Image 1 (cartoon, rainbow, N blue to C red):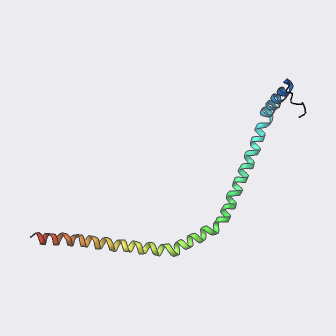
Image 2: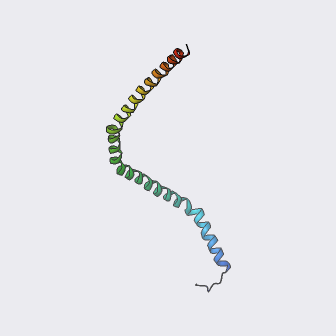
Image 3: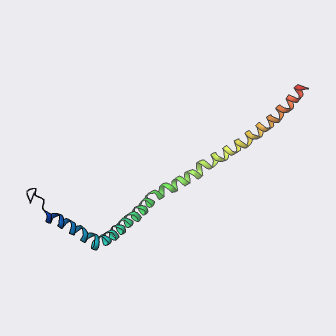
Length: 102
């Protein structure tokens, strides 16, 4: 726009010198500042999400303790009863087979 589309050697030299100056003198400071900003934002988001989800986690643990523990105990008792019943019937079937064979 300023040069009417003409590209000259001094433009490339300016870009090259500007890039080298940035890489040598400024890039390490800019990277350190960016890393500090990113870590600050990351820790702030973690704390914010923890604060937001804390009530949800507390309610979930409470509901889990109230609802699911009795259901688990009930299921465990059913398993115990069913395994005893199956084992008892299995041995009874062996005995009846022996009697039928004789």
